[in-house]
Length: 274
Image (cartoon, rainbow, N blue to C red; front, side, top):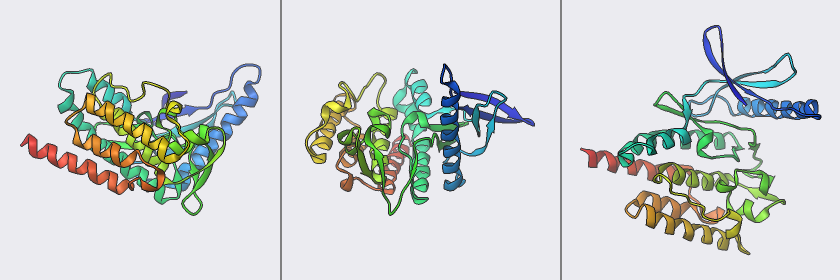
């Protein structure tokens, strides 16, 4: 639960831990640890303009802990939905490109601090005003050791943004690298920049699981490219990102490579506008 508040005239947001029912206090205790862990991750990651800023952890009179965060205007998901509801979506979506690029910069910074986010999706990218974006919700984030970490596949990411490694592992542990966040970023790009009512997943992601990572990635990529060809036949940037990113982990581009493709898109768009 998220509430808006203020302290000495400074707007703030309180991310409050849940905990109700007969086991409420036990749930509050567990949720309180999650809040503390998230604050610890954000503290270790450090301040960056494209990473949400956390100020403190507070505890209410009812014993519920809350993470104190800087207030955002909306999520990038909400911004995209708002623009898609208007006429002129193709022109309007250009305003989201710099925000997505800032998210990539923030995610790259997080990786540079040896953390995987593990919950990349448009609703976890916050927009401040109309000119700054920051990665948020580090509740699932894990520190990497030698550029890897181990997690339960089904506990990382929302299913629609889950990479083949996690889908195949299901309830088992799986070794992940930064490429897992890159996969989720590519699916997020599709979610944000695709036309209204365009859905990548006609069937649950687990439907596309095959015996190998190559087979699983290939089945998802082929499906995504078909959807793209039908909904966005002239969007070469979208096709390029899907082709390059929806591949086995070791073949995925770096975030800098991903960013480079989006920057070329922005340059071409500006030239066309002139």
